[in-house]
Amino acid sequence: MPHRIDFKGWQNLSERGEYRLSTGYLKKLVKQLGLDNKKKITSEIEKASSNFYKGFLRGFFDADGSVQGTHVNGISIRLAQSNIQRLKAVQRMLLRLGIFSQLHTNRRNAGSKSLPNGKGGYKLYNTKAQHELIVSRENIATFYKVVGFGDKDKQNKLSLLIKGFNRKMVKERFIATVKDIVFMDRRNVYDIQIPGINAFDGNGFLLHNCGEQPLLGFESCNLGSINLSKMIKQRGKKSKAWIVDWDKIKGTVYNAVHFLDNVIEVNRYPLPEIEKLTKGNRKIGLGVMGFADMLILLKIPYNSKKAFVLAEKIMKFIQTEGRKASVILAEQRGAFPNFMDSIYNAKGMPRVRNATITTIAPTGTIGIIAGCSSAIEPHFAISYIRKHVLGGQEMVEVNSIFEEVAKERGFWSKKLIEEISRKGSIQDIKRIPADLKKIFVTALDIDPEDHIKMQAAFQKYIDNATSKTINFPYSASEEDVKKAYLIAYRFGCKGLTLYRNESRKQQVLNIKGKEQSKILEKKIEEKDVPPELRDPSPDIPDLPPGSCPTCSI
Image 1 (cartoon, rainbow, N blue to C red):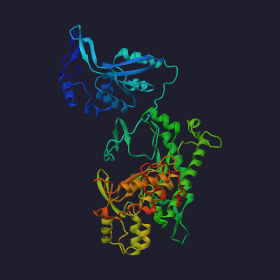
Image 2 (image 1 turned 60 degrees about the horizontal axis):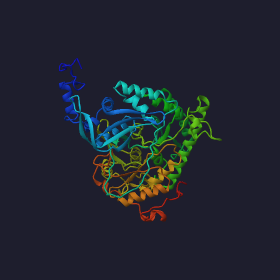
Image 3 (image 1 turned 90 degrees about the vertical axis):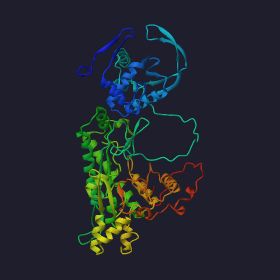
Image 4 (image 1 turned 120 degrees about the vertical axis):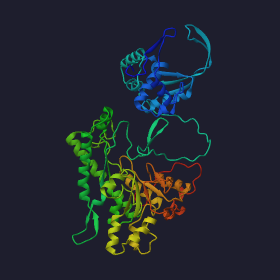
């Protein structure tokens, strides 16, 4: 502070045992934080940086916090306040720094107490009820490392207590017991997206909408995807028909597993905790993209039994060969360090280099770069506008395979593409041959149940999770969504992502005109739902795992 021109030094108030500091900068800062001379935690404070959090909380605990207990009866860091909302804000801030705490209300009842009167004596004052925030278990060590006390006595006491542990601190168990569920109100709820970071703050926890790679704390998301549109070959030298090139897939899988394992080794990690856990489990997520393009080239409709069977066969092959590749790497380099504590440490199980092998990621960006369809999704439309690319620009795209076929058959024209751009789908365009309409089906042409069947077919051979969107037309009802979830449960899906077209003003993929709301506004018909799932009662019983007639799930 001495370098500031408005610094006037510390004022010693000996009668109060205090030193005071007055600077214009601090007054300005207090105003920016919305404090207005009141002791509170404002939204401006909660939006501040992690470094600000650490300094602010350190000061808060210096003033009102304490270190209590012994190794026998338990150690804790406590913060007492009469304002419960203030403690809740502290709890949220601690959570954002990775420190869990518990709130206890009315630890001391309201009453009267003799307190210093500021004049060297004491006076009887009315006191409010006191609430307490308690940091315990392994969170104590995290608090010490991340926040700590500026008060030397408190910090030294905490340091000595932590060093005095002769065993590991008790881990935090995030378990809650539900005592009662009471209906209060029915309200609409909405998905949340913060542009840019695609994450949001949910009551102190950093939440993210992406779920294809479930991870432990401090693990890394190490993904790669095989472009299936390149994994085919011509049936013969003179034949124009295409077949799956299984040998090429096998070779690519071995190279991909080797490559992703190398990424773990050469990567530069921002935190030692991330490096330790990433190298300890060596998880990788090998997946696919370009599946819709592969089906088109093989002349297999996306929403057909043949497509579901092929999806399951391909993913089983990749999973099997991927594990074989991981076993070979384990023989050369050793199994992942945490192998002994894993499910693989069992009789008859091989030693593997990687705790997980496969994942289906969305591949939106890398799909654009590779020039293929995204992940296991069908094409959103034959022609569409892709927004939010290259710094917010828009990009009009036409399916290149369709363009090639249309030119080859002689019905390609600018007028045709304009019509497709308005509609997205080719199903209602009479001059397009019927065989092409079956093959070039788009996301909104496909019944939601067939979307779910495709997800279930791939998921059967996925270690982590599967990214797949179940597309609904604008006209979809709550009942349609309900049936989709029940069908997904029936097929054993781990989770489900549903999207109703035009439910947001801004969406990444858009059909050019306003006709997208009218495109094949299908619903899941009652006749297509298994009898046991029709018109379920309010108390839906647990449904036993069923058998998908198309993909053996």
